[in-house]
Picture 1 (cartoon, rainbow, N blue to C red):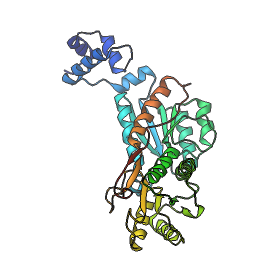
Picture 2 (picture 1 turned 180 degrees about the horizontal axis):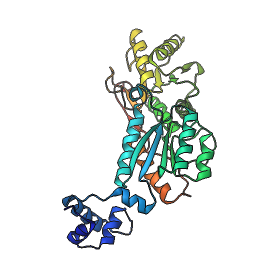
Picture 3 (picture 1 turned 45 degrees about the horizontal axis):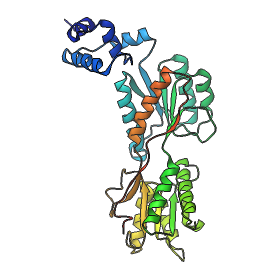
Picture 4 (picture 1 turned 90 degrees about the horizontal axis):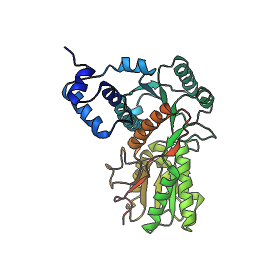
Length: 337
């Protein structure tokens, strides 16, 4: 015979309504009582009927993670999966499941959002890689649908979002190089359409200006986000009459290309030229030398996105526009003389 909620209540010495509130994560139950009830549920192997519970609550118990899934996504965009893992972890604690939905174009994103809102087959949407889609905002805001955008929109909007402060990341990278004694600082970033790269460059310029370090425009290169283009950009930097003594690479792929060209030219890292990049994954710890990075905890950003979407479900009028955890400088051989 299966265990019932009555059995749990009797074993825990509480009322059935108390067990129900614990299952629904009610704030009116003390943590001590909630812990005792959960221990009894685990010991008796009691699993609440989430479908029935959600039906009573008028809830699906489902959050959709809308993103762009393409072949080699795990390699091209590994951070997305860290964000998903963080969001899933926090949602699971609240009794929600996370469903991944593919929408490779702006048009597909709009169609998916319209369908989700019309069919009400989810309680909320986490939107990844949609920060440049202006057309999404009217549908979401008009319906007052619980949502959380991963990444600050590059246009004025009332959408809720959570992001990394990429401008601050750039400041940290530039400041570290100056503190290590470097003065002729270069930057290799992605194309101007990549707003993460743009914001990191803004941070670099801001830090150098505040530290009264001249900014040489010839030291700023922008290229497609791949190793071969990064090699070309690094080679051009080394052709300057006064070559830079350090380079900030916008991501790990660009750093790989830069390292290769630096070594081909017989230069020593960091004595002849220092290299710093962003994100401690996937290559920074396996290069020679290991790379100094400004790291971003995207897993924690996913956790926060999950928590925030639950807050939006509970309070639809809540406005959330927030930067997540602070970037962290991890110093390794590539910049430390």
